[in-house]
Length: 223
Image (cartoon, rainbow, N blue to C red; front, top):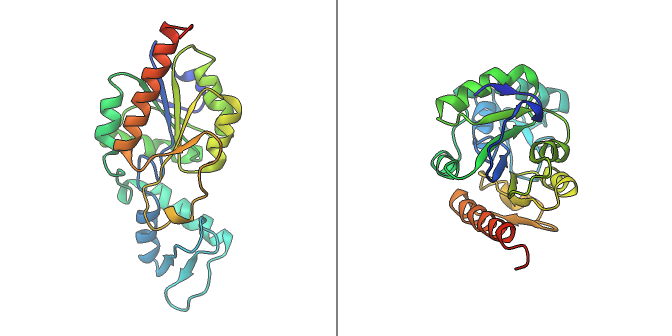
C-alpha cells in the first residue's frame, strides 16, 4: 500500500480498527540498534528507559552526547533494512488479525525515512497502511477512527503515546507491548486503562476479546 503522512489518506472498511506502532512492537529496535552501535565501538546499556545517557564508548566508557546519539539514530534508520527484524510472532499474528480488522501502522519516523520503512515492511509481508508523522498520536488515531461505532485498539511501547490516545479516543483499547527483554523492566507500569500484553499471542487474545465485546454491545445496546 502507499505511504501516508496523515489520516485522511487512509480508507477503512466497515470493521474493527487496530492502530499499531512499529519500533519495539512490530519490528525489533533496541536489539538491532545495539548491534549497530557495537559495530561502531559503542554500546547501549539497559540502565533506564531511555537512549540518552545509556550509550557509551566501548573504548573508554564515555557517554555519547545527545547530538551524537541523534546522528547515530539517523544513520541507523537510513539503513534499517539491514538491521531491523520482526518482533516474535508479529507478522503471522497481524496477518491473522487482518482477516477481521483493518490494521494501520502509525510510526513517529521522520519523512525522509518513509520509503525505506515502507520497503522493509513490504518485504516482511506487512503491507498495511502506514502513517508516518511526528505529531502526537492521539489526534491521529481520533481522525482515523472518526467516532465510528466500531471497535478500535491502539498498541505502542511508549506510555506518552498511549495516554495521548486515551485523551482523544477514550473508547479505545490501549495495549502496551515491548519486544526487548532487557529494557522492559525499566518501562513505566501501565496506568489508567492501559493493559500490558506479554507478546503478540497475548495481544491477539486481548484484541479479539475487545472486538467481540464491542460488537456485542453494538448489536445489543440495552445489554
